[in-house]
Image (cartoon, rainbow, N blue to C red):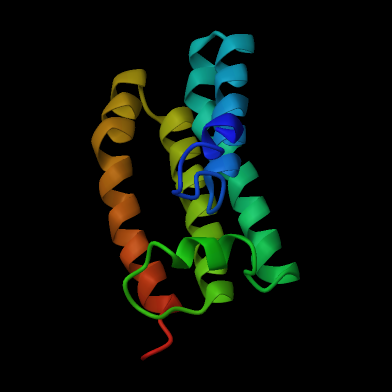
Length: 138
């Protein structure tokens, strides 16, 4: 991406591109190193807690000036960057917790159904709540 940035006018490295690539590499490394069913189930929980902790750290210690501001680029309404980062951090912890519950206490088939369908639906509903919480025009 760094090389491609020299040839295109669109900002490829701004926003969350580098962070996303780092998390993708961590996820791929996790999958490569730990190749059993339990680790596959726990990958979402572990990476979710990691990203949520980083996002919460930005919200608490940096007032959302890294993740919150960058995520505001994708929002259509005015929002407070600190509240957005805080809401997304909490959302990440909730999703990691729900994944852990399904991974630990349900069958592999049930967990697979949850990660295929329920995870997305729950994320959409909670994200709408985060967006409402972060709005500045309430």
